[in-house]
Image (cartoon, rainbow, N blue to C red; front, side):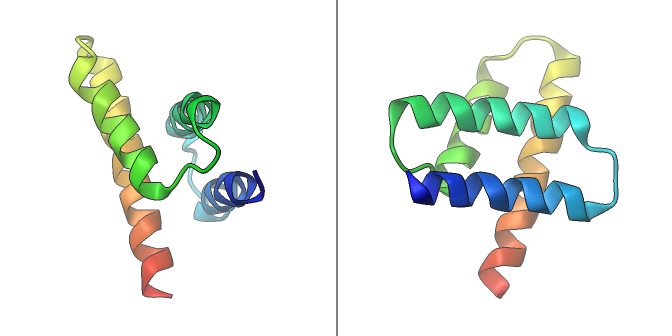
Length: 85
């Protein structure tokens, strides 16, 4: 459970420090993370990426697909930055 909270805080910190208005993407990422956290104790960045891809593939609304793509891009950028550290 501690690791799950750590991932959530990392995601939150990323968006708070990004300096841009990413509220829609942040909401999507938070919702997908919460969905995954109900099914497993630890949600990794890889799980989050796969969850977003799953939502992207099953969504038919073009506007929502774009939001999922942007959210996925932000998660991948954050994962890249944290893996470089």
